[in-house]
Length: 148
Image (cartoon, rainbow, N blue to C red; front, side, top):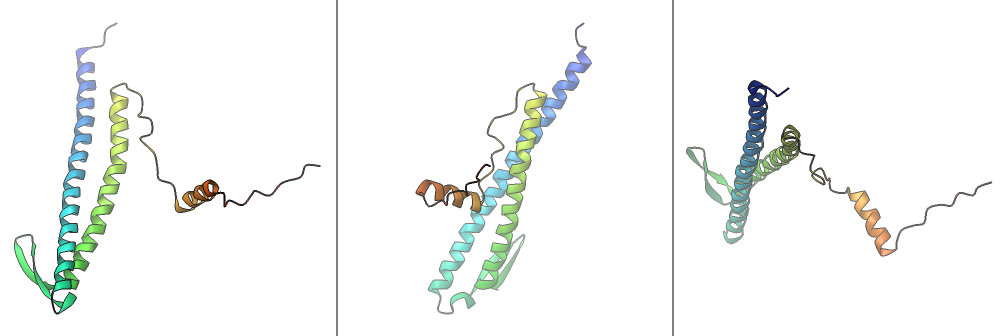
């Protein structure tokens, strides 16, 4: 028995919706990355400006926020930008982890198998230290258990 056209159209609509979610997440990550880069450039420029100014970080700079301009001390401006940078980092990481699930959902709807190695997670600091100790030969041998 052949599947009906309604079922096929519904399946295609689900695939299209899942693909649209993946693409919109990717675009949002790109936009947030651009904002992060411009923040990083602004932080660097303000820090360089403070180094060259006779007042140091107490000097003031003009900042554009939305449709308004504000004159703030460099120290305050840098602190605001660094806070914004942390929020952007969290947003990007959240979107990237959600993107993995969306891609897997899309592949599942397309009838393809899950991507291998897509869910890899970085080693923790302790795991990395342990591996480096083993590689260098600094690892302490495990205590031997005697069998009776």
